[in-house]
Image (cartoon, rainbow, N blue to C red; front, side, top):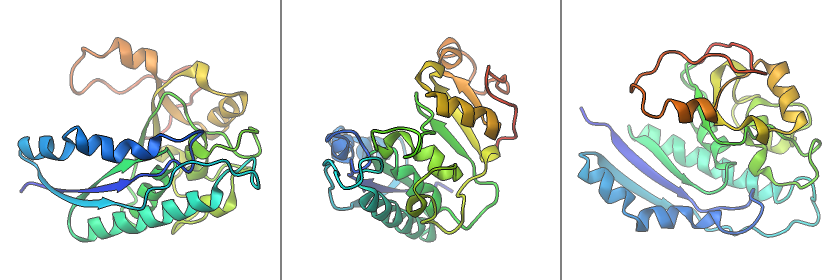
Length: 226
């Protein structure tokens, strides 16, 4: 039986460094994403977009910019994901900055303990408001999912449990080791996170569809992947 895909748009750049990412859901639709899924034989229900929120500087929270909006967006996204799942559909969420991922994960909880996250990003996003001065949550998403020390409590604890994920539920995929801050490298080692660097992914781009299990990379400890 074919699985119905429920498309959700979250046009927000609240956690970003500048405006622009809020345009992504509209751009993907204009590029024909929904039509191409249907042409591929998928059943698609488009649930539309939430309200557009364009990045603006938050001078009152220089290390945690737009934190209230980021929390609200994550909370709303989680509720929409739960509705799609309750309808028997598989959610496809179009963001938006990286903090949208917190809402997607929270929307699947509480639920199957086998939940896992493939974090596909050149940057591991393990910073916190206390570790970097710029205040953009766009490179802090995974730290908040894992409940790292120094995260913004209102964002890390908005979901049905804290932390939302354990380290062995996360695989950091195609990350650039040179992109990590010293803080992130310390988190990687302490949490025993497991990742595949972008150079290994690039080298295997012509490989089989189901490659062998990844090898531990320098600075990463072996851990179970849910």
